[in-house]
Length: 592
Image (cartoon, rainbow, N blue to C red):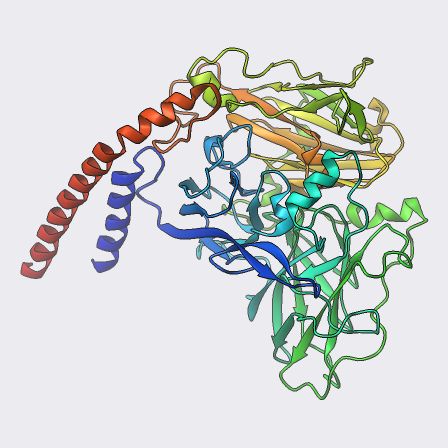
């Protein structure tokens, strides 16, 4: 009875405060995240970083399948802020996605409460600030969505979870990096790699004295789930643990076929789970390494992060050379081999009891094909810009779906081309007009000189093929139509293509972007608008009550402020009524 009352209380409060968002039958977890600047010296140089609740990196957001998640974000920065949750699908609710095309920024000294359900999802993700290179200064943290107890996981329960946020790092903050890009220059080689916000262990004389490094404390014989996320700016990293195998089990919400690796490439924006068993003799500590991949390692030696794996019975510190990285950077065919081994565990249950392989994507007819081509940055109207299909995206003053609801004309154009156009590049707010319940093929053609990661908000997609050269229809003959991994972020090598398939059943406006922050900042993104033509209020949520207005709707933000007092009064009255009702129930239970 007490448990029933507890969940009833959660549901009633949720309905009272966020009536158009919460699902009363599902539990709610709540967080307050205050983002501030603090001074840190991860690479030995004092600099301004973005902390969450005073922590760098930020705290773990922990939920379970179908939970309601309420996150009150307080902006103590000196510029606008949005938090995005890549991989969290925000079913029917792109208002909560936290990117500029769908949401007005949280103004300095203001707050915004995100309220979403992790519907039918499990797995490892991370959150971060999405505007203007802010992620390059921090503000990121891990997200864990646990399976419900009634759904078994396809491996023995690990003895513990270890979250690792790895990424390249500059000793200049994001505002300085913006200035570099705005002046038409590349960011250049990063100054290092951080592991959980800390610099490298002093593994040789190239590492300065006094740098704080991460230590992972473990017990012999136990198995830990390492959740590893590349939160960096633009560099692909190779991850490895000296003397230990990495058993891949999950990526971005999908259980994988289980395979051991001695090292693993993790590209910008990607998340992976590995099971690592502490099966060594602990004669010393062990190196945990994240080093730059697909670069000249002699030149890029400083772009290496090193943490320490410390057994409780360790007999001494780590010493000697680091475990070697793969030496195949000049063998282009080898570069794709590892990615092609990442396959879906078709017999495992994910968020639901039915097996992951029960969705036979390979038997569905493709309704549309989109070929998205990226090229090296080019000058447009005197400014360096990055493009997709010759269009460098300009964020709208008024977010896309908000403009629709309030009938704002000219906020964007619904004319993004489905293939590259033979015309000069332009800067425009051009959106892809996708079809609700379509089954689309997207070809990511990377004609840039840099390896890139592409991400789709609101969805996961099946990675059915990748190869070198220019994609053609004949390449479909080599697609994996049985056990392709389903994920939301995928790499595309320079001079190569990656093909993905997606079922467009989630209405809203969803960002399709490159996760490499420099290219994203320069405009390499677009949005997919997916609207149910028979929308009756059941397939897409209305704007939340706390929606922020900007652009051509700025006057509505002022009107909202004037009515805030009466809104709070109404909510106070609701809470008083709830308290009285619950008190009556409590005394009734005592009497009964």
